[in-house]
Each structure stands twice: as structure tokens, then as C-alpha cells.
Image 1: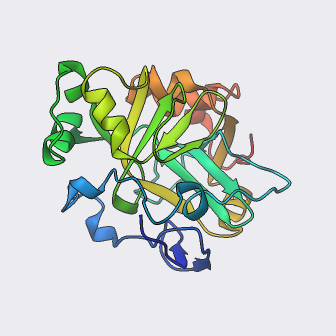
Image 2: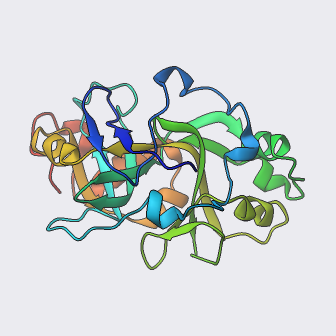
Length: 243
């Protein structure tokens, strides 16, 4: 994970200065398999995950460990009918993983390209999710319980986000976390951008429920996340996006 001084908002356009965030990859690369998957899950030797990816700054309304549920009017194809789990929200912006967009890739595909032997058939069949349009060559593992891994952010008391290869090696032999969601790429917002989008009714927010991330079928997660707030998402149009 290389340090960068710029992160670009998820929809393109305005850029936000953030010394802790990586540079957004071209949109054309979003659907591609990483050219070198061996680097998708690499422990950072010269930097620290928490320093460069997750600089936590106290702020008034922190949506870390919340769902962002796309409102029905969301026009951005990357985010239409998505549920994004926010792993970081601070004064410099926000970072999350989309949890309801499985791709055609499987864990077996990724592990084979990383020269990791898959000994657990069920693990090899697990889908790889589209985590967002930023850095689609990077791998992220949401998991429960937390555990001890080379490069991890503990998002809550139950859920962590890990980017190092060691967690995949453990999963391949049946010694990893009990519940995981593996994604390529992430969703990122610059300073004040998410707050503006919330004010524009782009999102509904709700405290996260790990059962929706790990247990519900991916096709049900959008509606299920909204139901946490007692909302039938299919009936919403222009109501306020705050949970």
C-alpha cells in the first residue's frame, strides 16, 4: 500500500487533500482482475495501515460502523441499490466497503493467482465482492471475530478490516475468522463530501448489523439494511437520507 497525498471522491470530479488516503484508480480498471493479485493482500512493510488508510480524527457525527444505504434515486451506477459498510468516518472523509455486489470472481481465483493452496473447498467457492471503485486492485477482508493479523483496522468490537495476505493463508487451511466478506476496491469520500450527499438525500444511514453483512443473501441486504430503521426502501423517493 503506497502512500499518496490525494484521494478522489467516488463519483469523480472534486479532489480532497488527504495525506492518509490512497489515490483512486481509473474507473476503467474497476471490473478488471488485478494485474498482479499477489499485491492485493500485502502487509505494509514501510508504512502502517492505520496511519495511511485509517487516520481516525474525532468529529461530532461519526458514522463508523454504520451502513450507508443508497436511496432509490441514486443515479451513480457504482452505488445504485448498494449497502456500504463504513469502516472509517472522520473530518478528512470516509471509507467503506460495498457489501452487496458479488463479482464473478471467487476466492479460488484470487488464491490461485497468489500461489495460495486452497484446501477448503467451501472457502474456494466464496464470492469476491466489488467493494467500490477506488483502488480496485486492492483486497480487503471484512471479518468477525477480530483476531491478530499483520495489517488490520478494528472497526468495532466485533468487526475488523484486514488487508494482509496472512488472513487469506489462514482461511485457505480452515484457520481464519468464522465469518468473512472479501472485496476488491473500496468506496471513498473526501472532506465534507459524505455530509453533503446525506443532506442531498442520497443515502439512508443505519447502525450496522453484522448478520446483514455475513448471513443475509447479498440480493436481500439492501432492503434488510433499510428495515433496521423500520423503512421499506422501495417506498422511498425524496425523504431525508438520515437514519
